[in-house]
Amino acid sequence: MATYSHSKICCFEQCPLKYKFQYIDKIKTEIEQTVEAFLGSMVHEALEKLYTDLKFQKITSLNELLDFYNDLWQKNWNDAIVIVKKGYDQENYRKMGEKFITDYYNHYYPFNQGKVLGLETTEFVDLNDEYKFHVRIDRLDEAKEGIYEIHDYKTGRYLPDQAKIDEDRQLALYSLWVLKTFGDVKKVKLVWHYLAFDKELVSERTNDQLMKLRKETIQRIKKIEAAKEFPPNVSRLCDWCQFRPICPQFKHLYNIEDMEAEEYLKDDGVKLVNKYAELHEKIKDLSDELEKVRERLIEFAKNEEVDIVYGSDVKASIDSYESFSFPSKNQRKEFNETVKQLGLWNELATVDTYELAKKIKNKELHEELIKILEKFIEKKKTDLIRISRSMNNNNNC
Ligand code: SF4
Image (cartoon, rainbow, N blue to C red):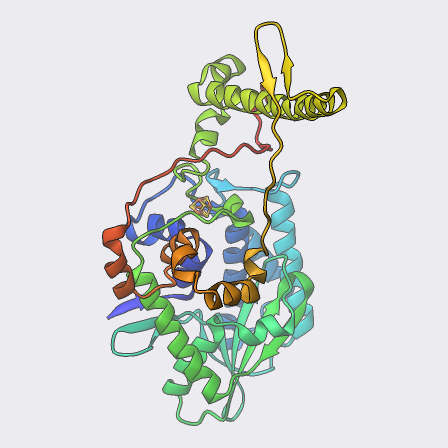
């Protein structure tokens, strides 16, 4: 039975290439962790300690808890942890964690909102006969008899709205495990603690919603398993991706990043892209200039009432011809009907191969149809170069 977790499915949704690196090729990277992930795990451990102590009838004082957190931070911090955001250091993040814990502590003291049934669970729930889902609940409480609460701590700087929370997949799937495990469940509440905002968000799911979600998750997993291509999906999340040094979108940047100015300017890639951009710019300037001269030449011929304008050893012939313009593709319904009524359709209409190629590429056509069409299709790879401004210039230069 294959096991999937929330983070595994999210990884594919975020970037199929990252998924391939992480879960198929299982590549280990030098970048161990980002500071955000480190902060999250330190705060989670501190809150786990708070509730573990409670089970032993001990209410840890805030100072004790902060000492525990700071001690954990010092022992586990290492230089491989990456700080992406410019202008902030380890100390800023450590203090953020302190604030999250302090606010949480003061908000929920004396922590008697419910009976703690589980902390950082490592359970699994069957989605069907093929797949099981990893259930890692930060804290499972029973608030009143039969009223279960799945608590999740968030340490990010993003506060979602209620609509997003009501669509969340992770805790909703965890509630399938709660429903299956406990016989007296009357209600399962999903509770998120957005620690940076000292805010609690709550949602619930009906049985129908859960069944639908289970089905959708199975379909998503099947889609992941059927994937043959794993294209990169560049987004702002790339800044936190541990595979940047080997990702084709950023690998060259990593190769040149630490070069001295002289070495950097000798790099073939740097030289070629600089030259390409320079020529590209020149061609653009020249074609703008060409268009202006063309307009002036036509005007000259008109004013002088001549068809040919003679230069030193060249001449330019100026011809005028009539061109026809028909309704655009989206407004052709009536026009197409008229062509059909006139009996001209078979003679004049052609297959829109651009649209057809798009449908094949986006897998909008059934595989059987594509197979039938395949004998007419010649596949070739076209290389494209797009020039855009890069924010990652080598500082040395
Ligand atoms: S850096 Fe971005 S595009 Fe590359 S693998 Fe990571 S998430 Fe995907």
